[in-house]
Length: 556
Image (cartoon, rainbow, N blue to C red; front, side, top):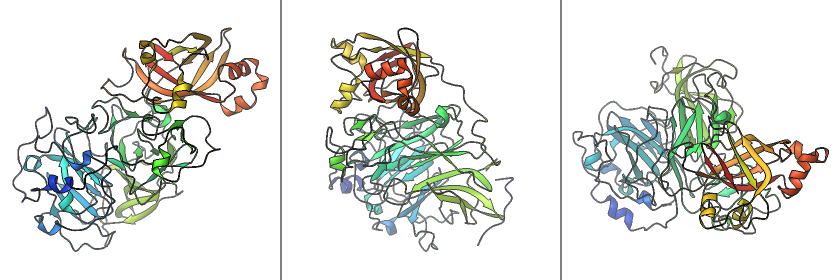
């Protein structure tokens, strides 16, 4: 039955011990009592320092109801159906979750069928009860955030409740960091949990459309809108606890998003005018983790795709590496109707395209949600009759993505390109694979591997280190200017740093590329032809490694 409404008010690397799950969860199935004292702002609650989330990848999702009947039943008002992932509702293949006030509830998921099971309290330790302000569930994990923004991770969320367990640890080293808060304002609809596992998702595609495996562990992150909405900062439990890791936003990082959802490494954003973009992006798949993933900038078309995750991760192998740069944002079609601020994406099965987008809305006087698969051309509407989770959003026809662009990045940088016969270069490091995202120009200089300058200089205006691709210019010794593309991805950082650029060198991996049309007709341009033949060694794209500060670039 539908309702007629007015809208005016409205990771990764360590094998799992099968014994540990039972040890960690012992004693968690306790009755829920009155709310306790909220966590102190100085850190998360200390009663859950370790959980099985810290030793991925876990088990294949299996569901099961062992322990569910032992959970205390909730008798207050609660959602009738859960079809959107928000900061108060969530779901995976087997379970639904709802945050009602400070109480985290669960029940089995029946795929839209009428529910016969009651809502019950999710098991959690005493120190967390009554403190929660937001949730997000994806795959086999659920993140809960307290009123101070501290993150708690519940693992095995796609198993039976006896295996559910919590940890407040987050960040390096190896998910044993002391914990962190969600980046940004933590407003509802501005952050989300994203998990891509070797079991439920299994694969992703690179920019060439070639399928790769997620590896032997998981890709877990919590992306969040920060600043004016043009920045997407992500927290990763395996990275330093800082705000320096970003997903470069649409339109070169200048699109101002107001709403965000993410799942299976697919990030979904929308602005105040209903313009929507999606991107498949993760630290591992984008070029930053050469320790576990082989990357190449040149075309891998001559090599076969690896048949499994083990062979896909081997450096210098016979199989195609992950081709960079990372895929860009996809502009999604506008919704032909009324919408709210609640947007949602979730995985529907194995494979990179198996994502469903949902946007809460109204159609013919009924509440519900608009939905489509990631690559589908048009939206459909499903009524639910549920009260709206979000607030109404303007949705004028036509593209209004440029209506509220953020200013361009303030850094106009340049750096000399090194000569091609240096002992170690970006090409050398990329060929060696493993050290590519680890070894920076500063590190090379520190061990005496200096580079002699060539006649060429690279200039780039409005350099945003979070962006993947931007136009740049190579200036020859005689002043001739050659348009190029500069691609970059973050290097692997082991210690915290500030976001953006400052006096502390920021290591990036990257490539210089000659645009296709220019490369095809280079014989008509003597300066370009000479640059390609000498510095580019005849190729249209070539790997570099670079350090960036607010004052300039050091390139190898």
